[in-house]
Amino acid sequence: DAMVIQNPRYQVTQFGKPVTLSCSQTLNHNVMYWYQQKSSQAPKLLFHYYDKDFNNEADTPDNFQSRRPNTSFCFLDIRSPGLGDAAMYLCATSRDHGGETEAFFGQGTRLTVV
Amino acid sequence: AQSVTQLGSHVSVSEGALVLLRCNYSSSVPPYLFWYVQYPNQGLQLLLKYTSAATLVKGINGFEAEFKKSETSFHLTKPSAHMSDAAEYFCAAKMDSNYQLIWGAGTKLIIKP
Image (cartoon, rainbow over all chains, first blue to last red; front, side, top):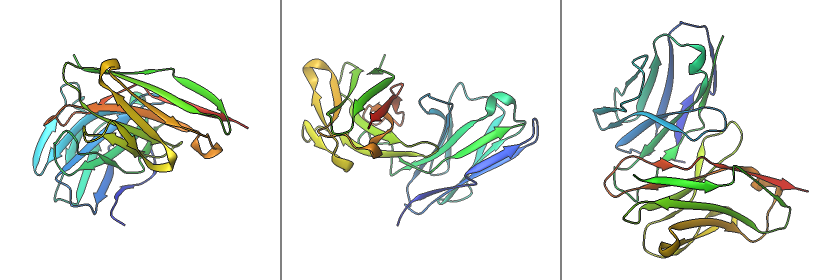
């Protein structure tokens, strides 16, 4: 089945130690998104790629970076995780930017910072 | 400014009872509307979407939603709740040619046995 896969499902990292979360998709979608979701809140968009074009949301901290080496893979790098970065990180894809095109989500990576 | 409001952060219903989760949008032009479900420690799964083709939209797991322009609403319903429906439900809106999903705050559905 075509899908969005996130690895790992659970990640524990130390305060200040860089961490990378990964996402892959078999849908061949143009757009890949990274969301941060804290407990009992709606997802918050961090950034997205349309093909190779990177789009950063204005309020995304500089501590968060992303790479998309090819259509299938996208990575979220947190350079110096703080306690406030503990959250669920969701990767999503969509065919394009069109209003009616839905986003397909991965299972998420729950990040714990110790 | 566009916004999505979900009335009730928690909704509790008995198993077998009607489920009604409310969603209202605020925008001058009717947006595309989506309902997603999220089970604990999982990603989000699309239940259904409104794309202006039909005002009554049927989705997965027996859910449906009706778009009412006059009320700027897109409420989610299911005739008979099942224990497996316990989850968080998010309503979201998107304007044409805009990548941004505008999210509601979510409603946690609790099913009482």
